[in-house]
Image (cartoon, rainbow, N blue to C red):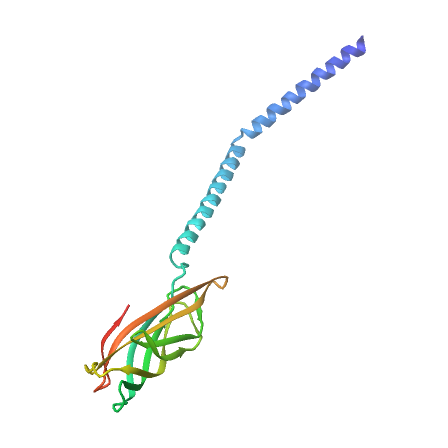
Length: 212
């Protein structure tokens, strides 16, 4: 009986001790230092989340603006004609000439552009009368270059009724290449040039120059 009472007292003492320890732990959690540490943790977590969200927003803006893939811009700066000869004795008339065009290729991207070899087509009345080549090359971001394309043209089938002395031609090309962003993301883009112009046969001058 005495042992049983003794065991009960020990159990009561142990229970009281555990309650005191739990109260002390609770007081430590609610202490000013613990509260300050908790607030600091929340503050740092908030700052970290804000930084991550800001990075996501900045990356989204860059993808929609700077890192947006754009087609190269191809434009015809000038056209000159030389070595023009006409077979006046034959009907219909045949015209031979050398057409030289200065074409500007502009990279509009914030990344490098490597473009393929490209054919420039010269046509009269929907029929190809001459061809030239833009050699493959590369352009750094936001840079442009001018290339000269020389074409030997032979135009046949000009009837006697076409005596205006003006010859209407068209020049077309489609340049394709690969744009590289940050050296990682690559995508193929292409640009077109479609121009029309007229040649004054008497003077070999150019008029009615129009591109779209």
